[in-house]
Amino acid sequence: MTNLCLTLDYELFGSGRGNVFQHIIEPTERLLTICSEHNVKLSIFFEVVEYWKIKEYYENGVSMGYQCNPADAMKEQIIRAYQQGHDIQLHVHPQWIDAKYTNDKWILNLDYWRLPQLPMQANESISMGLNDLIRNGKRCLEEWLQVINPDYKCNIIRAGGYNVDPSQNLIKVLKDNDFVADSSVYYGGIMNSELSKYDYSELSQEIPYWYSSSFSLFKEDRNESGILELPVFADNIRRIHKYDWIRIKSALKNKTNAVEKFKNNSLKKSKWEMLGFILDKEAVTWDFCLFSTFKMKRYLKKVNKIQLKSSFPFHPFVLVGHPKDFYYSDALNYIIQYNRKQKGRFLTVSETVEKIKSAAVNRPAVCKEELIIDKINQ
Ligand SMILES: [Zn+2]
Image (cartoon, rainbow, N blue to C red; front, side, top):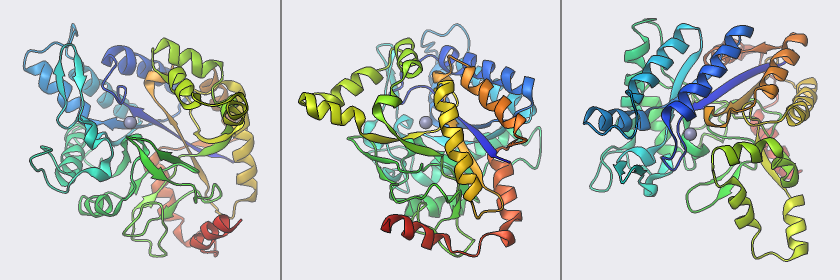
């Protein structure tokens, strides 16, 4: 039985580009319809900072081209999704904190692209520090959703762009605000660009979760009082397979620079170097909005293998998706039908955390820290 967790990052593009209705509300509506047809619950990571800025500008008379209030539409959809049984948790992109809307576009503060770059408190370079950001984000969702369910808690987070390295300050703030889990890292993730920097290459796909140490979300501690990390599943696949037709079509529809990015990465390379580049492997997250059915089958095969060998009595797999990428529903429909046929389950992140905590006594005897080290030594 496979336990799958479908997580959705509810947001515009990281650059501030995009239209709330076209890139968030409408595709999320299509996702909610499919999920309600099959009684599948999503976990929606709501990007609260762009919501605050969009609301602030709209209420100050800047329509940003919208015919009706985009912030209200986001809030209404999130509350409705919660009423339908979906989980709502926190997503934060700090580059939005001091965003300005000028000349028909958002100008974001790229100096604060990564959550770990934020100072603990506001200073002259940024109007909100890490403490206030996490506290206010949590408060925003709890104020909306505790009206429906007084027991609702916003206590799980995903950092923008998978950036949680280094995570010492973030862990402290999460603990201070009663967060219990994070889902910001992915197996094999390595990024060293101007904006994003992290190295999760030492993580083993065989370890579905761990309690993090007090200094790093991607290092385990034997003490189970740490923040529980639920990594997004990813696999190393060749670039030639990553850029399949669905991904290119979605990039073209969104007019994103995915194709240009690929070209830029491969620029200044000889023919042989270029061949090496496209045949080279890269960790690609398991994406239920952007994958083709072919790729979905490939990942299912992989997780089934991991599941069969797993020493964990409860072994969840976390998938990721973005409404802005959701143009084709074939892969989502496929995985829903496949998992149901196999008697697999779809769990929300809150249900997953609850299950892990209640199954704590049944965890495998082998220390997962050792498993991580084994993997490095291979
Ligand atoms: Zn995001």
